[in-house]
Length: 255
Image (cartoon, rainbow, N blue to C red; front, top):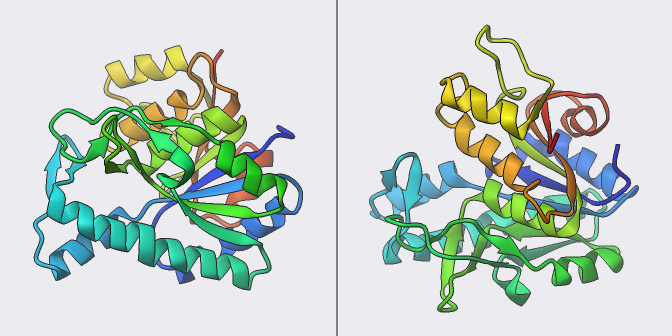
């Protein structure tokens, strides 16, 4: 177990569905620094439909044009961020909503073919460290600045990995499955970078799990301050504690 900070990536499902893990987040924040990074892809798609904006995809990644970005900023940076911050405040945390553009937190080049989307984001966690040192619990919406200073969409798993790489400690990517499965459908407790690459090449790790594994490994790239990353089931009882302290999900280390 690390004594350093922990970065928890949450999805953008309803607050009711996340009450248990939000309580765990508040409890863990009482013991050590913690940052929440949230997504919200499903709800963004619903809002895009409501606003009459077509959702476009390439290889499972959302294409973000000018119209989609406007809705993204309102839903991800506004509605979902406010809901999570409010819920954590109600549970007693000193939660504060931030966006990945605040203080130049997240930056990177644009992804080819995806429009206003940043690939391979890098974090400058100075603002987060200031908030953590003051006792706050930052709740970060995943967006960042491209080389021209333009606000862009950022995949939430990638944003969380970038923050963890800058802050150090541990990264927990909450999802809807208890980690990575082997060819027989059994959970793999821990993977190295090379082992994960072999499973991807063999097609054992496939579909939506591939980018999640990539994000978990990106947090541990050379030069990173992070010590460990975990992909875990956010719906499970005591999900965060089990991921951090009891070996649930799939953990990743450099070697």
